[in-house]
Amino acid sequence: MTIDLEALYIDLHRHPELSFQETRTAGVVTQRLAELGLEFEEGIGRTGVVTVIRNPSSSAGESGEGPVVWLRADMDGLPVEERTGLAYASTARGVDPAGTDVPVMHACGHDMHVTCLLGALEKLVQTKDEWAGTVVAVFQPAEEYGAGAQAMIADGVMDRFPRPDIVLGQHLTPLPAGTIGVRSGTQMAASDGLTVMLYGRGGHGSRPHSTIDPVVMAAATVMRLQTIVSREVDPRDVAVVTVGSIHAGLKNNIIPAEAKLELSLRYPDDEARERVLEKVERVIRAEAAASGSEQEPVITTDHTLPPTINDIHATAQLTLAFDDAFGQGTVVDPGMFTGSEDVSWFAREAGVPLVYWFWGGVDPQAYAEASAAGTLERDIPTNHSPFFAPVLQPTIERGVDALVVAAREFLGDRRTA
Ligand code: ZN
Ligand code: ZN
View 1 (cartoon, rainbow, N blue to C red):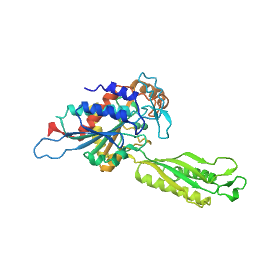
View 2: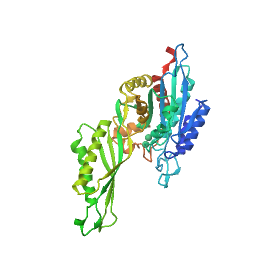
View 3: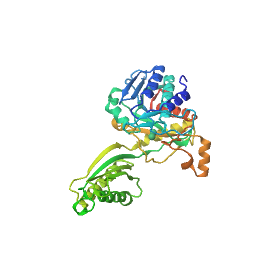
View 4: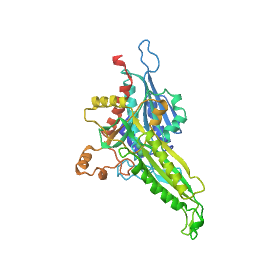
């Protein structure tokens, strides 16, 4: 290895950056790409970086670029104050979009994602005589905003670089280091964030009959929304309707004119999304009407994330490849996560399969002890925790090798050509 991956990881971990501010990180990436002799373009979707390894088959009659495999890593940190106590813990600070000074930490492992993708690119460069095709490495900004993939697409990433035949990516998770978690079908939920404005008619708190009270309207709406999952969604399906924020009024004797709700919705697929969204809108409009509101509620979508759906055939093929490379028992089914990701925008935009897997970064002995004691939830820090602290090895090695094995599985093989 030319790149000292442990030193690279520690450097990235010490210098996390908030979403769409990953300029130092992008600089580290481009420096390493240059050292590997790879050309790149930067500033894609604001701070994204893309490099292409072209390795067309030389056999007569073949043309084109061969299979095009996209490997994606996200780069952003989070506004979290690190409390791991590690020698290389972050003390970085940043300014969030509201202009607030905040602590910054790689609490989701995106520093590990970048490290492993650079390590995988070096291995793929070194083994070019063994494979044929095209590797496109995508270093994406702002996954934590759910906005980076779309920003890169809006910036023409699909047209400026070879379009993918398959999109691959990986995420660190609190499994034992060395273990890979992947499942066919829905791996992560789809999600929408909605803002709802409810309109009443303000007035004096002593004269409610002359007003239309948006506080009562909002309260009734919140309670009725709870019945969507409990009464209208098939109990065998997964859905979440959370009202995470409710604001109305300033003073006890003034009935305000409006109320604001903020909702987080989760579902496993597009059909469930359509059904739940329709029910949410029906309840909001009906409760406004029941209150006698004279102005229709306004429902705004703040963000939309598609479900992360792993292609059935590609996932089965890749699971076998992981088994071959790492041994039986390495791959587990982690179940569906109700968290969401923006990686699948790339596969959706191109209309191609996606496989997105998780891999562990927890000290296997600590994991085994917590598992035996039934204290996994308490003792093993999850992503976004201030205590999130993946062990360096075998996490880095397995992350690099998983990307290489996966890329090679879907590229051409020069040795058998
Ligand atoms: Zn995260
Ligand atoms: Zn993440």
